[in-house]
Picture (cartoon, rainbow, N blue to C red):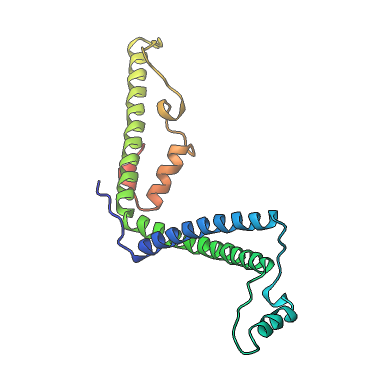
Length: 198
């Protein structure tokens, strides 16, 4: 059986997206470790715009008013930035997972579509085996009946004889095999002629 896979660009996009999501997961782990380290040291999250203007003005004055001395970022602002970055990563992971799921659904549908004829042939093969099994059961039952007739009504015990259940028993309307074979006839997978009296 030929194993064909669609050469759809969505497969490549999915691989790239999976790689990016893995990178983001690693980045999130790293940022979380840094957040924990800062919080363990007593840092509290402070939004950068919450840094007092006085502090900023003091650095400006030290620089002579016009020179640009950039004040060191307070540790709380660093922590806030890391928390914000982690939240953005969490959102990106959520959106990426949704996109990956949709791509997987699309890719799977394309793959199934490209191989539907193979599947139909496997179903036909299976149906033919079940039909032959049913016919074999009918032949075995006819053999048993002929022995009863030949012995004047005496029932004979035959070795390895089973006479009931889906595998060994007679056709029963609405059992699993009957229902499935009728479904295949209705779906055009097998014909009524192929099914016959099985």
